[in-house]
Image 1 (cartoon, rainbow, N blue to C red):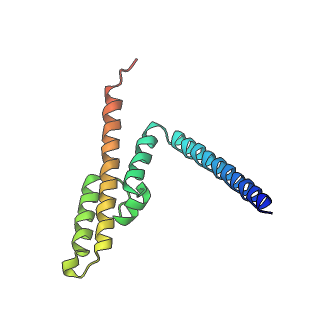
Image 2 (cartoon, rainbow, N blue to C red):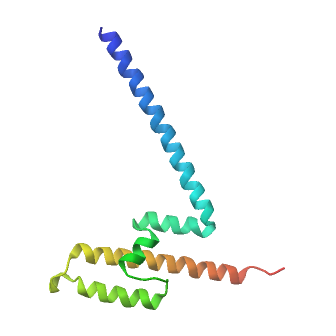
Image 3 (cartoon, rainbow, N blue to C red):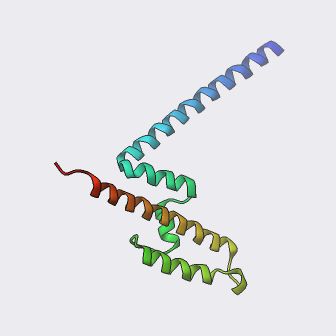
Amino acid sequence: MAKYLAQIIVMGVQVVGRAFARALRQEFAASRAAADARGRAGHRSAAASNLSGLSLQEAQQILNVSKLSPEEVQKNYEHLFKVNDKSVGGSFYLQSKVVRAKERLDEELKIQAQEDREKGQKPHT
């Protein structure tokens, strides 16, 4: 009886393990395909999203920025940071979200500036 129970448990673990491994491979392939679709800059942007924990769209929504301009990002950041300061009754959680969103947008601006430099340095044939 115990032998059959052990065999059932082992078979169940094998089935679940295979299903998990297959799902993981599919997720990696989908992630790689999405990054390839975005191009080379997409890899950098995806890496920045992973590091900060925020996507570019989320960061833009938090700071209420429609297009990526350093002046607008800085202006909105300063306003939202001051409004959410704990000493004036704000929320530390929201203030930290504002900081993370600014960091993410700054990273994206840095990526765009680097792309612009690389485009300017490529020889024209």
